[in-house]
Image 1: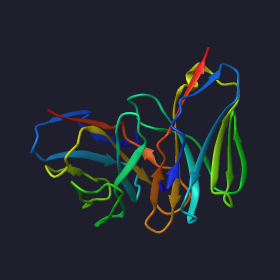
Image 2 (image 1 turned 135 degrees about the horizontal axis):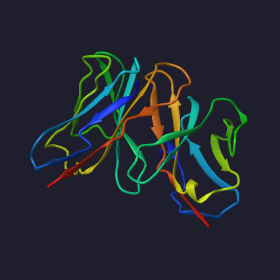
Image 3 (image 1 turned 90 degrees about the vertical axis):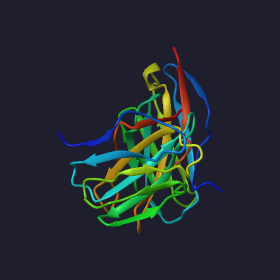
Image 4 (image 1 turned 30 degrees about the vertical axis):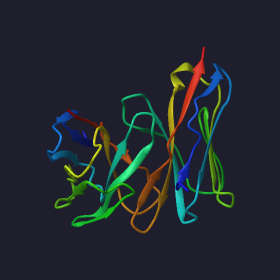
Length: 111
Length: 113
């Protein structure tokens, strides 16, 4: 079992719709979670971070965390063609400070 | 400007050769990481270091080696033992313990010819 799992997609949504990206993790010791966006050939850039159960909103983005279910999600409202990218979920574990990434979900926003 | 610098951006290696990828940061971060990314894949952890002179193997360390002699530098050597080294390599750093994100360099694309 992979430590961080995501559906690889592609996930296709029409422009203006809500895109919902999901991630599960296996290490219950994971204490913080991050969503990165990566355009083809580029390095990942941080979109959202979340550390406690519940929702966290930043503009069009909302991250949701449920530690009991070991589940993290990212909602993108009013999706734009510029949101088309691969979205990577990452989990941070203390101790040796390991940061583990999922395989990423490719999002396509159709104009 | 503070940041993480990876060099070179593109690197070509002949089969059987060792090659070293550079990663330098001036963010005063304690923790540094190396990831490998294959086409259409996520990031797989090669090695990571939380402090100078200490590092741990990640999930795919075989065929790679690292050193952490200085806080700002974390070079990755791809050895001839790595059978399929062609990939996009990403270096990242974090301030240290706690809930902070990783910052990435621009990556090095390694191709074996």
